[in-house]
Length: 376
Image (cartoon, rainbow, N blue to C red):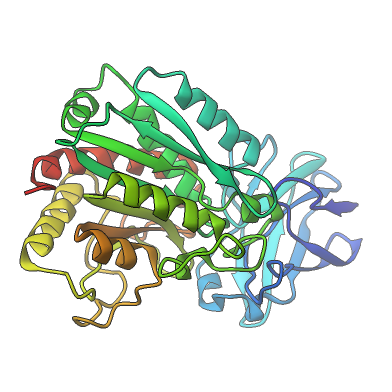
């Protein structure tokens, strides 16, 4: 029996792995940070034998309440990821699984590899609708990529979408993959109509360093990028620095920052109601967007989510608040679950990569309904 995490986005420490029924593990902290919760490892073991894997430091994770009702994902081929029995006893997270093959991967959620990220960028670049812009290097020297879809025009609405500020929230880049697959389909009527009136600026992965390092929430320097939007620096948060500078050059009429939530088993958005510039027209447009998205898919709801900020109390270091205030535009943080959508459960797969992709496609339909009003 052998356990390893020596690969892209791998994260686990082996405390003891002598007996299949008593495997003791711990999740590593993000570099220079107290955050941890993302895990991703490979088990070599005996097929047909139950393996009991205990993550001993689960209660000290960033969001221990997220373990309640949670099930880990597993895969034999790294393509199909399914849920396996998991329990949280208030201290430890215990994964029980009887592998059908000699090796199996386990993860907090379906991984989105850096290799797949690079493939996504190059695939999108093949479209005549897409321009690929290199924004600059990360702290580890990786590329910050921006995809511009549609012909830039002063009269068109500028729609910005960013994902994976928190690298362990891999559902966000699966969302982007679905979003781009529809937006770049020149036979899709919604996409064609949107590109007549809008230009899209898409950053599929805001935090490639943290993604490769197996972090939950921070970049290579241990910085939470979603608290850097007031004053990003090249020394600590170049990823945000590049993107915010480009936003200043293009303008923003709609902003969507895509995330995953550890605890809530629902898809929802959080708006920028607490920023000083928030007004009734932005509120009405936001309500229209949410109602349209609910009409498009049962995966989205508005009953459960974060508490709404009181006027003037928003944290302006957070991306959606900072962008909404600076550009006086409709801005949302979109959250997807690590668990399942409790309104539409799937016992085998829970919330998954394919469902994240589909939600990305459905968001375009909601955007279609509000696009003409974004600059009014």
